[in-house]
Amino acid sequence: MHQILLIDDDQNILNALRRELQSDYAIEAFSDPHAALQRCRESRFDLAIVDYKMPEMNGVEFLGQFGKLQPDAISLMLSGEADFGAMIGTVNETHIYRFIGKPWDKVELAAALAEALAHREQVLENRRQAEAYRQQQHWKRAHDPSKLYQVLVVDDEPNILSAIARDLTLRGGYASLQMALHQADTNLPALHRDFHFNVVTTTSPLQALERARQATYDVVISDYLIPEMDGLSFLEAFRKIQPDAARILLSGRADKDVLVKAINSSEIYGYISKPWHEYTLRSTVTQAIVHHELLRENRRLAKYADG
Image (cartoon, rainbow, N blue to C red; front, side, top):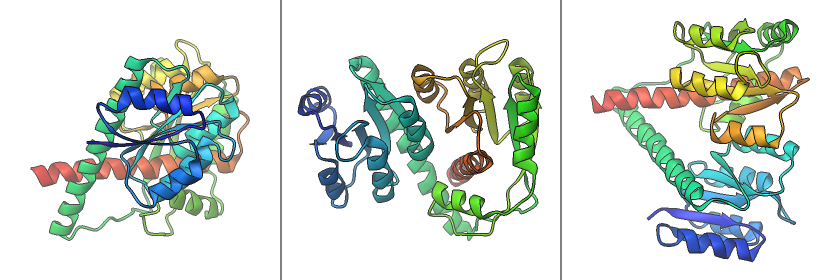
């Protein structure tokens, strides 16, 4: 039976969640996040449902520590009061699988848990088979320093497109990329990897979707307010064509509801605010590449192992 961790400072919320979930899962509930972290040092969990607004430690802070203790667990954020800035931190720092609002819908909650756990099991199984294949074939991961990572950017403002292309392709110091690489996957060796980006830009989401049918991209970045369709509709359509590409939302006018949809429906990896800092842009793109590159590799090797 799957082990589920619940953290909320409201005991009534914990009781309600326990009633709904205990028939299908093994539940441990905590109103004190520090006590929950101590328990995480003693026992493993498959999934955590964490409230954002708690008096001693907010949900983002908790998940930052929880992720170090249990990197294989998957996380859902539960909140009715998280502000927009807090949600951006949740997306970029903890990469939660779903955001669940209060009050929650029972059917949606059950579906979110089932999808999250199925996703986790598939990722772990791919990794297990990939590691077995690596050992059997004495296969070692290698980075091609000349590789050009393909980035597709959609925005209706040509000056924004030019600025993103400039910030991603201009060469400079790589300390920020090393930090991003380590944050993205602490299991990877601290190689002096140099990331090179080929940035393709367009003001048309329809043209971007056509490009996606013809070429493979590692990352797609989309503004929220674009012509022909909004950014979320575009990212969802892009995901159907290229599910392996990391999706990043770019906006200066998105709100909390938009970000919730971006997390739950478009399954974005990160969010970049306008105006952005070059470090934030490069770091977010680099982390997305490292994360998705490893997932793709494990899935590919798992097929070889099966094969």
